[in-house]
Image 1 (spheres, helix red, strand yellow):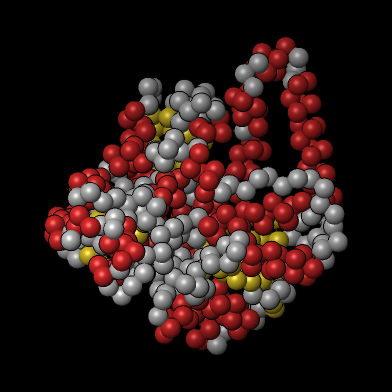
Image 2 (cartoon, rainbow, N blue to C red):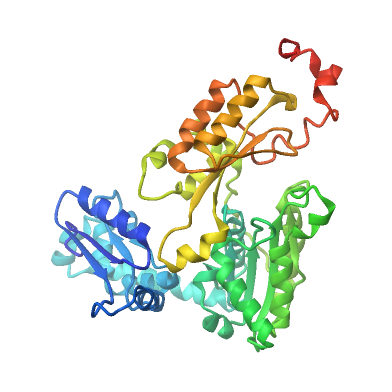
Length: 477
């Protein structure tokens, strides 16, 4: 890796199949020597696949076998190194910064290569001095408030975005903050923490997001045993949801259920609540930000930094409009992602873009745990919602939708409260043909997700008898 002309990667076959495939593809494309180090704790033919899976998971989660990729063909040194072991990402990055400081500095500043020899590293010494000064300043600023750990659970990225926002605002107030997904933070480490903030969104029928499910399960199991896991933990929870997502009154309790359950469970396990539960609602005037603005000051007050004057301007938040502007007219890298057969999912950066196209990425929750135990990625598929003006379609369009469901979906389609068709179980390779077939039927999916078209077409119980919509659709009757 120090020579900078070889592709190097560390993989674990039973840990992340997707990472193994990605590594082999990158190694094959690299113009030069490629070295792939693979971990497989196999000693004899009697070893069961389950034991190998357990040993692999233990080695990866403990940091004994880190997963990473080093690709010198990337444009910058920061892009060249990819650490795929989330549980040890922070610790390993700190180690690399310390051990390979000279190599990384030379890679980022090629002009220093000769100077390190001719000037006996005076430039390097100066760089180190500046780094030490910055570290000292950071240490002093950290004295203003207690260290804060921020854990998030997020499927679509919204909870992660709010967690990162909180980290930025905490550092502006002199609080040393760290951020991780819930499942990447071990329960044993959590027992040692003092101040922790949990931010979670809502998935499915009031379920926790995928990267927080194991944490929720561990909390529920401990509560069932009557354990008191925490003696020093001081916590606060912020949940995100949509109060109008479930139209039936009997389903109203699903609203922000993960956040509410987590708040109660942490107190039950011995944690001390330092700020009341915050709830962000998509239906509020400013979306979840309305509830966030109420909850955040309570947190700063509990941490004793509510009187700290923040003079540095915060970075402008990345909104959906920013994403649209930067996406080349909603293209992003969706086309490239559809050609990638190594995974059934699209890149996270395209997840929000597909919503603008009326598409949600999902996975089969019923077999999620089974596939995870087998070392497989979730069974990804896509939901497609049609945009249908006025909730009206022709008989032929109905037949076309039925055909699309049989050919590209799971054989069924739903009629939703948005008065339109909705397909489920569409796998990635059928995504493009499905959209093409919908367009061929003179319908589309643009803006059908993200609740842009929610509750705007419920004019009458029977749309075809409405005088308001008869005029533009008179050709259909």
